[in-house]
Image 1 (spheres, helix red, strand yellow):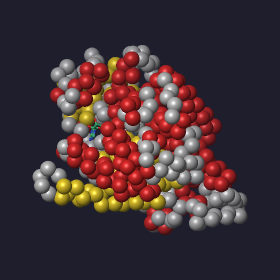
Image 2 (cartoon, protein in one colour):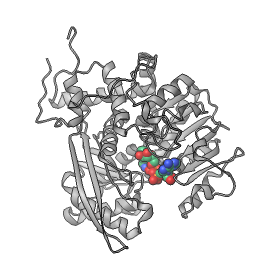
Image 3 (tube, rainbow, N blue to C red):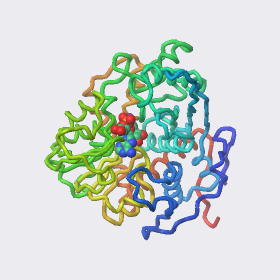
Image 4 (tube, helix red, strand yellow):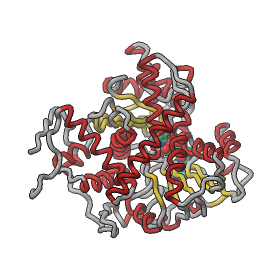
Length: 468
Ligand code: NAD
């Protein structure tokens, strides 16, 4: 008999009671595909119209089906604990007040304080932040770091704002959400469009109200109690996953060709560290375009130029290509490291690699995932592949709480140990249950969250009883 103490668990949000999308059929592997088929028919190179929340909810549902989780428990796990939306009016250099929307969504805190990045991007909305918060719950559980899942964002475009304007928005956002944050409550980190400088402003603003509290955010600059190795961590983790998966995918890493979509923090670190292992970077894109050079692109030089303010297509020692053709580049490993929904039903068939390691969050729609499975492409899913960032964020938080600093070697070694353990656990489970790495990863994440909820006394039983 299930007993849920509703006052202790999440309130039921609209998703919990809203009927799900029509099932689009089975892909022949027993996986029901709930992604809207009509939305992605065009040949757009950019993002699919399937929403980020629908993508995460789809994988959650597949794993919950396998685990025979009861509907009322699913309703708790598929909705957020708390969703905060705030208005951020800011006077900008055009002399006008611009009103931005800021969000912080706390999805599930059974395993520890909420943890998740803050995104500054014009496409940010509640659906996206909600999806990314849920993803963080499963990601922290799979990596086995003691956190729950959260995410935040502001729908501003930092590329069109002056530095002082970004600072103003960041500080105002912190002022409005600080009541739901705290070093033992909810700890933000960088994501798309934010970086160590943004984290420094957020920490400083929080400190004005609460005193110096470096553990309030992670991903800070080294000079402000940031951790060695945090900046590279997500890309480094992606490369660990690539190394682990190479054998199963039939890829020989020394000399392997890689293509990278998005050359920001995650993409550029993954590319630079992969080339250190002997891989050859053959194609890269960013929001402004794409380039290709089958003889190899100098990942360090490209990074240097991008950090000086140039775009990827401005790189001289490569040919400009249509960004839509990046996916079609023949290569061993493709690393999506930009935004969600970039590999969708209309372009997945073009994918021409053996292995995809998902650096970005939700880069692949469910329909695209089925196409990739049919093509025999081995996929290491986002929910484990890009966990390196939150793992080293955890190390940073631990160092901040102890006021003690680890060396970069210590950080990197511990990161490698956790990534390898996560990969082995998921690969074993995928083999045992005869499911994809993604479904196996979600199943492990869900089980760990449920165990924590049970031990706290929030739930007694979660499975559908036999004969129900
Ligand atoms: P970033 O802002 O540093 O870089 C994003 C990159 O994507 C930029 O090069 C941008 O030009 C590019 N981009 C944007 N739109 C594009 C498009 N349509 N086509 C090709 N490229 C495009 O962000 P980041 O921190 O590197 O994050 C990238 C992805 O990784 C996101 O999905 C993020 O959620 C995920 N992620 C980041 C971290 C982290 O620690 N930073 C951790 C886990 C997951």
